[in-house]
Length: 70
Image 1 (cartoon, helix red, strand yellow):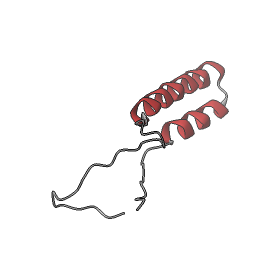
Image 2 (cartoon, rainbow, N blue to C red; image 1 turned 90 degrees about the vertical axis):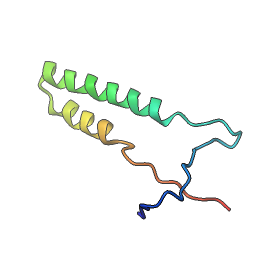
Image 3 (cartoon, rainbow, N blue to C red; image 1 turned 135 degrees about the horizontal axis):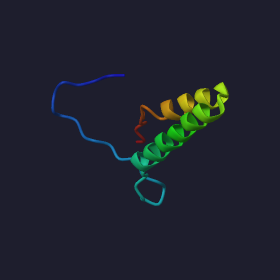
Image 4 (cartoon, helix red, strand yellow; image 1 turned 45 degrees about the horizontal axis):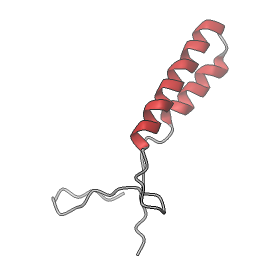
């Protein structure tokens, strides 16, 4: 990935085909909440499955990459 230290960049927005903005921040907040619930289940039940699931859910969508359409 290429990062620029210059200020000649524009912030991209992810939109649907109809022009509606996608709410990635809200989705990340909800997935973090779900991960917290899985961690709670692991503590209550002692089943390692829920800990692994919490880790996967929490790490999901950490970085978004955009492709420029011309």
